[in-house]
Length: 286
Ligand SMILES: Nc1ncnc2c1ncn2[C@@H]1O[C@H](COP(=O)(O)OP(=O)(O)OP(=O)(O)O)[C@@H](O)[C@H]1O
Image (cartoon, rainbow, N blue to C red):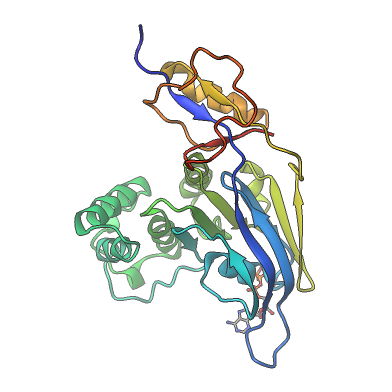
């Protein structure tokens, strides 16, 4: 008998909710957002749309916890949030390696864990030769990559990307969908603003449109009830199976490489089986 089969589970999860959120920058200033209401589920991408200056960045910063609402609240924000601002603040006197290691520590990693993840992401984003370079000396595109790396140091339950393609070279732009996929595959969610239409390359199911202070949400899944399915596939065919599930519109949230399905003898799991009592379920079907 071959080794254990990878194990994929489908579930209905509870997501993050912006509940009646209002924000203005000054006490007597105009409200930038009024009574914003939006939800995102684990394993989903929400694309934030709207014309320049309408409040997309403001909405993303509220979701990320960078800004606090004047009224209303953000419910069930994941513990680890990766925030990539539109412009990485490179005016800090650290080298790339020192900055990323320090950010890993801020994210709660151990000293060795922070150094290891800083190394891993430096390499992954093609920043190795900039390790010893100070942030203010970086080009805008390289600094943006440092911004991406810091957001991924501790795998985020919510990754917030403000115009992530701005300023990146084409090789780095190709990486963005892969990073998004990784966050989704681990059961996280992704919020992304994009005025260039690059999000067609992402498996986006929700659209949050901001206009005149109001957020309107659309989702292709709508309020449809979600089915719970567990799928075991031979290890060598994981990539193809995941690609097919995605192509059919399912959300693949995580592949567990070494778990045996608990009900391998039962081809039709009972309704509701696997729904996240232990929070470990990892795939949504619609
Ligand atoms: N720190 C701030 N202080 C005061 N006003 C601000 C601040 N940040 C943003 N604003 C204002 O809030 C409104 C929304 O700005 P925001 O940056 O959220 O829009 P946006 O849709 O992301 O714009 P863009 O597409 O140009 O990035 C704008 O009128 C902007 O001038």
